[in-house]
Length: 504
Image (tube, rainbow, N blue to C red; front, side, top):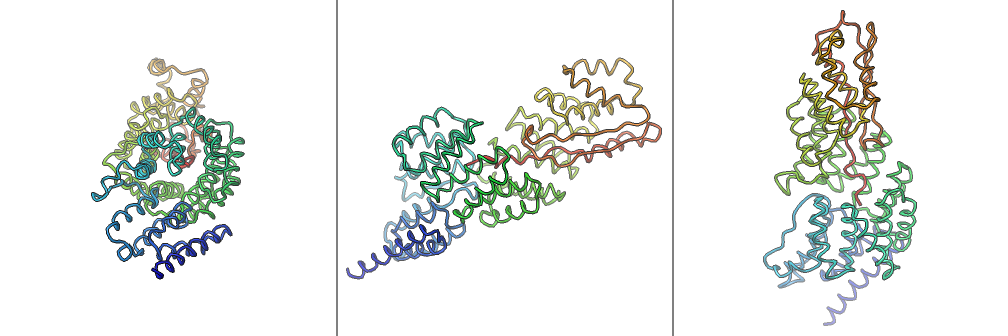
């Protein structure tokens, strides 16, 4: 009996020491103390909860800690149950996977903590509708479930349910004004509605004041600057989050994204590598590493990373059905086009169209591939569809004119009625017609072809390359297909990197 009392006092002292170190911002010693408390008593759930909720350990370190716990020595019948409860608290965002409930604990399927854990899995697998369904059930039974609230708030943001989030945040502020999640909910609401980023920052700052180690608020605070392209301030918030959440790879991922947006690919690659070392199986990180490789012109490496990311996503199902992964499929199409695998590229773009059918840039990409394959009539149709969805798409306007020129075959053909009949079926506005006229009717002695970059604000994409080629008159031209390949091979589509930009 005296031995058990001594043991209990030892783990209590370790737990208290860890809390003191945590308050002093000494995360290393706090982590060590919490680990010691757990090893002395595996039932010290508070220590495990603090380690996981404050993101003190990486996913691999969490697994190693769980394996090192003397569950067999200190537990008898409930060893499997305790292991299951601990595993439920481990990181769920490092890779897509499914939650499996052991047969011995079948009765816990309706337990709210288990349901929340399952909802988290769906959230990090980007299945927000299923996650919302589960969190709504939990919120009905327990409207202020502490572990469910951050997941539910994040799901409301992803599904753009502004009214519901507004009602929830006001209820939380009224009942729990000293809880950081209340002000986090208010900040997320203002961040979601748009043009209220200053208000969002005010409330998110209040959340971090109430609890400095509250990671989601710091990340959302960084997002409030990122959406305004205030890269330095966004990175400052993400760096603070990275210091407080050493076991979480998301701050590193967002820092890398900001460096990528400022065209600093070297630093972006460095931070993506750090994120990859913390969560080596996260498809979001793999996607961004592939984007950097694409920007550096390393098509083979980019294809490898994109395909690896796709394999991780398919681990939870044979097909990709969540529209969050549409940019990944489009980027696979872009890199296959660069490697001249045109049929594969078309297939990836078609899969992307299934996820988001009305995306003008996807139609432009398909049209571009058809033009490189010499299918000018199909290319004209796809560019026309893209312009129907976004009339100010400079790339599609330019390419449409160029493909019509190639389709007709020679400048003299423009004088006839066939080109007029061809253009009459496209309901262009005046500006588009003028642009087309300039493209397909250049000076006879010298024609210059210039594709403009689309801005980030228009597309949400990163422009890669711009073509500035000139051609001599028809007397010195090479064969038609060769000329087209020379001119078009370098006038590139846009690579999409918006997958991870605003998820909290």
